[in-house]
Image (cartoon, rainbow, N blue to C red):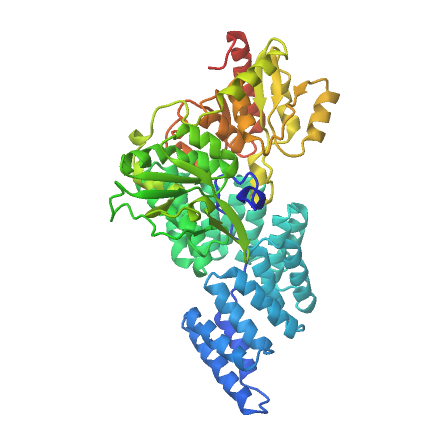
Length: 595
């Protein structure tokens, strides 16, 4: 199974998500409840008494935030009595607080099976399921809890978070509004109402609700973090940094802390403090982030500060999504130069990109990485290196090259592109495009394959593209992968002609790359297809979001300095952006090219 199968079209991930879920399985109140269960045991045998002692020790460890020791003691209790639902619950709490979400989920499930009437277990499992993306399961568990505890603030809040993540925004608002009528001073509810607005791109309204939350609790770290994520796309990056710095000390547990550090790293990069930012970006690999990838590589990781790589056999492993591999892969040439003629670079990328990277870097050995999903996490490995007898000396995640070779704006090469399309395919597609008749050949992308949660605010409805589609003198080429039959049918019904090439636009990326080069222009939002065109050096116009960090505090995209950007001033500012593209396209048609 490939990473593309696990997370198709994942772009610039892990994403900085809004924080709304409430509740802490290891809070003093939660541990007191568990302790109360221990104080009234019906001991029948010596073994049960010994198991009880282990559980008491586990709870003491949790109170001291020693979750590794707590898990050890809980496992010892389970070795004595594997049917103890309480022991499974304690183990689940320790696994969750240690960031081992897959094991935590299984332990919560075991606890709930043994304690079907214990609603606290259902609530904890509901939170964990939401965090790992199992939204239907989470909703059922939270509704079960609310059936026993109606009006519970945390559970109601968490149900609204699940509805928000399912894009049931109206349901989420109604869930929150009903309880806010009873609990109008709840900072938790106001905060989550803000996240419902921010997920839809309404950052101004979201900001109002985050500020209302902070009015009721100025020390509420979640709301301050969320306010930072609203302030930055509204143009107040310095205010956002101030909020993030204030929120970090109040983070609830390692997951929230890692998420806030991720937001801070991206904001540092946005502000142009790229030397600090790219180093801070290492947090993307933090085990406590559920979407962080594990790398299964049998070699030491290269530490550029401690070891010279010259003469070494260095493995670079691509990470995140296809677009990210093209952004971060722009540093591969620097690494090849660093290892020198006596060293060798081995490059692992998404299988559909292997040929492009091999043509661009003939000195390297390029192969495909593979990924499996274990316990809710993606683990990446490199079969072609594992099969080599000699192996490699060192390895490094691809994005970590930025902290080595892109420490200032001046270090970004001024070039049109760095990947290379198959020249025979380019010639073939140029001939095919000529058959479509005269006019500027414009390749189109308009959405991502992944539109869950907050990702939807980065893309427009197809209907909004109509002014571009109707440009006189332009021949529209469909490069959009996925099921777009409904969009194309709507265009045809409106008398708009869009040509679709007879290829699989998701899997045949060699052809998509060649088509992008053969076309006069490629237009679209910041997804894999537009990144592919820009990395190839094809004329590309990218629609960028107001929180896009890739500008690095400049007025251009340093990773693709020749690419033209149409930046939206707000998440809802589609019409004005589309109008600007149409005007530019009219000019390109008159000039006969978009270069």
